[in-house]
Structures are given as structure tokens and as C-alpha cells.
Image 1 (cartoon, one colour):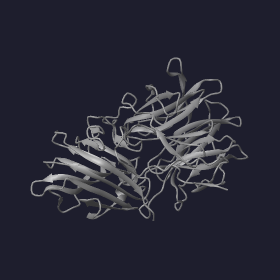
Image 2 (cartoon, helix red, strand yellow; image 1 turned 90 degrees about the vertical axis):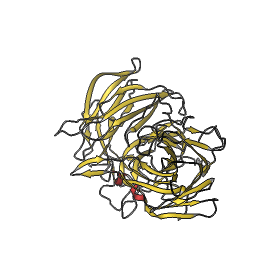
Image 3 (cartoon, one colour; image 1 turned 120 degrees about the vertical axis):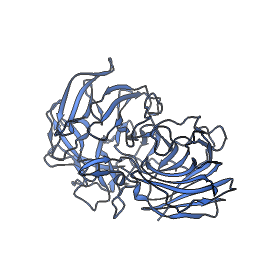
Image 4 (cartoon, helix red, strand yellow; image 1 turned 45 degrees about the horizontal axis):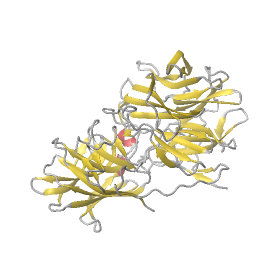
Length: 535
């Protein structure tokens, strides 16, 4: 018997939506403020997965300039019907305070790899939209509705409205079909039809340690829906020792042999801090319909399992991904992302100096508009990242280097810059919930160096930066730093029971450049290595 080992999508890959088309399985996950929008992974055995694309790769589909941290793309929903792929997603423009500006769109494609269409606007009443394809050919959009009023349940229920393909808009009355259970924070809806019922799957309890999946059902699409009296079908909330925590927000798929599997988000906290530096990841569980007709885990429990019985499908492996990006081609690796906007030749060029990535310095790490930053997800607790930079600053306002980044308020930065006394130098800056710091007493002079090699070594909760002149002899710079600062848990700031800041993403490693003088000085990066380490 073979087993799937969770998580199946490691690192920041939350809110999974899964479909099967023939022998192929696809999972779409949230990307928030990172561009391009939505990650799509492919598999044929539910065990081995490979990133194959990002549907939202044009500004006309996703314009996130100015979007807040953890805004942007929330909870995409992928579906397929009669030769067309449908992707529903939210672009979140604001999410703190009593109001949520959440605009929901749909794009379509005849090929999962694209090209995907221009977006069709749906509504802005809430977030986490999904599409249900009824057997009679009608299509329906389901989303949670947000209630900003004081004294009301902000998670105002799950609403449904018909979508007209001819008019390309929502039509007809809006029905609130489910108000949730006492767990509250009801979101992430999906509808499935089986065994004479419409089954409504929702996420509840919030996306932290109280997260859960709740099932409800009805004999009518428009309700009313009755919640499963047994409570959540998946949660780690009452299992503090479980390896997979924060389990919730799921989506169901049926294999060719009618086996049921649930993909869901989870977190793997470092202990004892309970911080998830890898963000919210995607796991999978085997499911059944029980004797009472409710969806349950095949184990009979509600705790997510690390090892899950694999389906009766032939194994389908992919080639290993390269550890080093040499910047030798005309496109950067699919695993790299930028913040809020697509890569463009005027600030991120592979052609101006072939064999190098040239980043032109733009705005600061605090910016929500024009950052020259390219990074990839941290997907293991034991990793090292390495690059080499050729950079000739003549002002302390010009910086370039290696970034360990969660968001604009939480990061560590190993930078190269210039100082009046030291000349060209290397130093460290950090931000912890917006509190800026420079961990070194003084930067280290590298005056006269044409290039400087930079490295970050991460061992679970510890981060050590290093630098080198030749890439062979490495010198540590500064003390070990606390990597748990780059986690959802640290990004969340609550005062008097009110959330003042939130984080829903994960840690990234990459390259960046700033020129706060506005002169757009460039930095040339010869390669970037992301390597996962053994114990």
C-alpha cells in the first residue's frame, strides 16, 4: 500500500481548489499581493505535483498597484465544464477595519495553461466566490457576504446568485442559504451534488488555530441547508499536538475509480513558538460518505493525517526542479514572483546584460506600489539561498541585495550600499511589525569589491546571513536572527481584541534593489540558488 505524505504543496499555497479533467488533476491556490496571480499545480496521482502556470499574468486581469499587504488574490475557485475552464477569484483592495473592498471576477480558458480571458466582473458583496455547475446547464456563484454593521455578525452568511453566460453577469435574486454554525467566521463555500442532496462545504472558525471545515446539506440548491450535527468534518482545533494545524478551507475531488479526496489548507508550526514560517500549505485527506450520508474523513476522525492512503492510480513523477536560476534565458523561472505588478524590462531586465538579472532600484521595502523585488517561496524549514551582486552605489539611498521577506512590515534584508566613511559596504536591516532596526552596530566595508556574494541560511527558527568576496570563503555577518518574525502569527497584531494588522502569506527569499534618490541605479545578479537541506 502506498501513501501520500502531507503537505502536498509545501510553503505558501493556501485556499486550495481542486478539479479533475480526465486523468489530470489541478489545484489552484491563493497568491495575495504576489504577481502573477493564482498558482496552478498539476498531478496525475494526487501525490506528485508540479507548478505549471499562473492564469492572472496581465495587469488587465489583475491590477494590484497600491493593494495592502495580504490583499490581492484571495481563495480562487477552479472548475471545468464542457471544454471550458473557469477561474473565480477575489481582488482585495482593503481588508482591515469594519469594511472589506473585495471585488470578484471570472476568467475562462480552453486550455489550463492559457491564455486566460479578460476578467468578467461578478460582484463585491464578500469574498471566497465559487461556481456551481447545475445539471440543467445553469451556473451559480456562491460567496460569503460581508456585514460591516456594528453589532452584527460580519460573516453574514453564504449567498448564491445565478450567472448568465449570455449576459456575462449575475442575474436574478440573491439568496442567503446558510448562516453558519456557532463556530462562526463562515466562508470558503463550495457546493457538491451527491446522494440526493446538495452538500455545502464551508470553512469556519477563522484561518488560525480554530480553523475547520463544516458540512451542510439540502434537497434544494437554494436551501435551507442543515449543518452536520456531528460538527466539523475536519479540524485540528482540539488537537494541539497534531502535526498539521490550522486545518480548514477545503475542496473535494473524485478520482476515476470514484475515490473521494479532500484538499485543504494547513500550517506546520515551529515549536514551542507555534509560528508557521512556511505559511499556510495544502494537504490532502481521503474521504467517504458515511451511513448517514455526510462527508467524513475515511479515518472516522476529524484530525488531519500526515500519511494518507494513496488512490489506486499509477504513480506519475516529475523531474526535479533545478536549484539554481542562472538568468540565461529570456524568461525567469516560474517559481519567482514579484510584488503587485508584472516583471517589466524597465525595472527587471534579462536582456540588458545577458546572463544576469538587472534590477533597477525603485521604491523602498515599505512601498505598496513599485518595489523592485523578485523572490520565491520558502518551502522547507532547512534552506539556504545564495546570490552574487555587482552593484556600484554612490549614496546610502541606493541599496541592493538578498531579502528574506514576509511583507512590507516584516522582513530581514542583507544589503549592499554606500557610506560616507566606509565606502561600499554590506549591512543588515530588519522590520518587525513595522518597527525598523539595523541589527549590526556598523556595516562592513567591502570597498573595492567588484562583486559580493550573499547567503541566507535558515534552520527552523534561526536565520544566519553570510557574505563572501569569492563565493568560496564565507563570513557570517551579524548574530543569528529570529526567523519566526516572518510568519502569519507574528504579522497579526491584536490590541484590545481588535485586529490592527493581519498576515495570510508566507516567507519568501529573493533579490531586490532600491534607489530612494530616484536615479534608478541598477544592480546585476548573476544567479540565485534556493537549496533545501538535510537534517
